[in-house]
Image 1 (cartoon, rainbow, N blue to C red):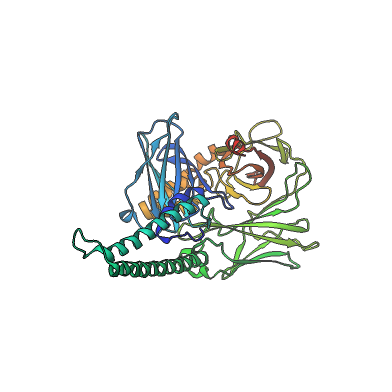
Image 2 (cartoon, one colour; image 1 turned 135 degrees about the vertical axis):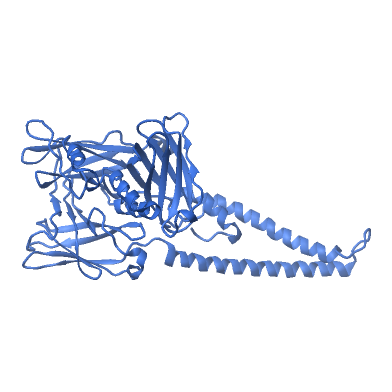
Length: 508
């Protein structure tokens, strides 16, 4: 936010500007679909882009009835004893089993939003949310004019009170002020004007200092890092070195998500003409030395690639690093540094269903697609005879999806449980309720290693998997879906056109 005309109105400005925040890479919505106790729920949290800021939360109970839904924000530095009382999510008029609430995030850092469903089979689930200032918003002209007018009235009132006091405070009733009192009143008014001017100048200096500190220390900045392609006769490597000084702070230590410290995605900048989908590479760089992570590159066309790197921190916070790298022609190809690495070549005209090898096909249905609403991306994998293929665990899930807007402004790594980090949700659950609640949270987040083997096997026999996601804005998106069948990672890419919302079109 830029400098207001009077610092006294800072909190009013923050309260009015909070709802105006925009999206950042990774999408502003955190989506969870799983269970609270045994009750299936879908939770959507719209993260604030300013701090303090309001997070909008919706909870839909997918089966059964809920007597009450409670939401509670738990900051990563506090326990339940230091938390406020839970807020009651109100039923949404005209909807069945849909509840909404708005929570203030007053501090920076990671929050775990506990969603508790009261009713038969009810329970709790934790949805991790980042609370960081992504935006520095300009003040709307109308609000600036309003605050300027109020400020001028306040200044005039202060000067008038001081002048009147100097002229008449000790004057007996009924007497008219003489020339001496009038001059004293004028001098007092001039002195008051000077003091008010000094106060305003001091306030402006204070705000400039606070604003500079906000930009330098508090406005979100992704980790600084270097990317380098290192040729090697045994196979070219992509090396990432985290150079950010914050890496030494305990809250920023990396923790595994889906068993990997780092998830890295490369997307070719040159997509095939027409309806094509570009090349996608999914890597899991391994630590080589302190803050250095290396992955062997697969065989790729030379060119420029956008690079998105997902990190989960010990505090429960997450971030997606963005960068680009140029892969030269003729680099040697070696064995993958991680067995779960994969590459999906560019496709000029993706079909639906799409062949994914060995007679298998993947059919994609995005459902109803509207900006800001939950879309359920559904996949069916079939054998050549039309029967369901058996989905095996891939990174502890039935499948993974990658969603990217064609201009790279939106990127998300999506799971059957949504867009949340499984390890971040687990950390909040363990902090709140111990290891037992942590294991329950793993199962609620779709971790196939946290459920009995027979349950995991039954889930995979249908050949189906779905991913809840909120497209934050209109445009062209690419969606890649990855599953494991017969021990091989299979990837298919699809193109989704998200139309402009009717409300936005009317405003334009």
